[in-house]
Amino acid sequence: MTALLIDRIGELVTNEPGGRDPLAIRRDAAVVAVDGAIAWIGPAGGAPACDVRVDAANRAVIPGFVDSHTHLVFAGDRSGEFAARMAGERYTGGGIRRTVATTNAAPDTELSANLAYLHRELIRQGTTTVEIKSGYGLGVDEEARLLRIARTVTPETTFLGAHLVPDSYLDRPDAYVELVCGPMLDACAPHARWVDAFCERGAFDADQCRAVLTAGAAQGLLPRLHANQLGAGPGVRLGVELGAAAVDHCTYLSDVDIDALAGGATVATLLPGVEFATRSPYPPARRLLDAGATVALATDCNPGSSFTSSIPFCIALAVREMHLTPAEALWSATAGGAAALRRTDVGTVTTGASADLVVLDAPSHVHLAYRPGVPLVHTVVSNGEIAYQQGIQ
Ligand SMILES: [Zn+2]
Image 1 (cartoon, rainbow, N blue to C red):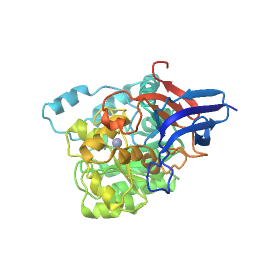
Image 2: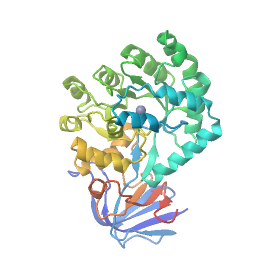
Image 3: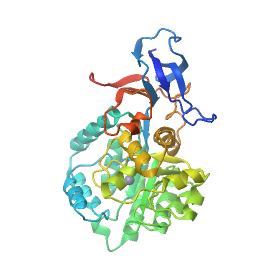
């Protein structure tokens, strides 16, 4: 049995539900983790002796970030495309094909090494739970390979065979959807928890997405959806109708879309790194929150439309560009991400939850947005163990 104590916490963000303050902040606190779970929360200096002691020295401690939307398994670099976009070219999503080609040409060892590098990058920035999608294989064996590799770092894996119609099926997209719903799903389901589709003009329409999500559900996968990224469309309403845990992007929303999300069980996941990197308008986050929707913030880390692994960067964008308060942004990147993954054991600092905590090199969580671009992650505890310490690991 290993016990870890974080003592002398100046500000502890717990996200404990039920109170008036969604962050449920405690002052002058201490937390004990035993065997990977939070066993005790109490006043600073009042904890029992533990094997490992971290002195927070009056810093802020928050739940580890829950990044509920990434595409971390890929090969290749698309910085040239980014530079062209910043010089005025429009984003269309077509560059995904380039990543599919480089990914399928890469051996497992290269994909695993790239994933390990990026996963480490996430941890160093405070992310302790991550969802990873396939979608750069677009073939039966290719998609299954990406999910197998993703599974080595997280149980939150998502089958996204319906990311884009591959070149070889361009003249018969319905045949590709049949492949996705049949042999590809059979090969991928054992390695995935979720099923996803890209519901967008130029990708898949509502009927095709419905077929994919329904077929996935029949094999025990839980639905989520890429929706309303490049324009208005039926994606959000389809996701809500099918009981998706989350609809992701939500950049272009009608009043009907917002009503559908308000107070419902489907989380609106916002990915402001995409709007930043594609120079697009930001999602109407304020309207969503004011209507009572649950909002999550995630990175969408991928080589084309959002190559950031930094949740603190996304929090800063959400506050500055989407008018979330610093508290709303932090909640969305922790408890909101957990809701988007239907998890109650992460995104919170409560007794019995997974001991995933971040000590910030700051006295308050507000600094995440107040000091953008500054590396404020001091110590990361994942599953009750120190996963990163500034200047040490
Ligand atoms: Zn995505």
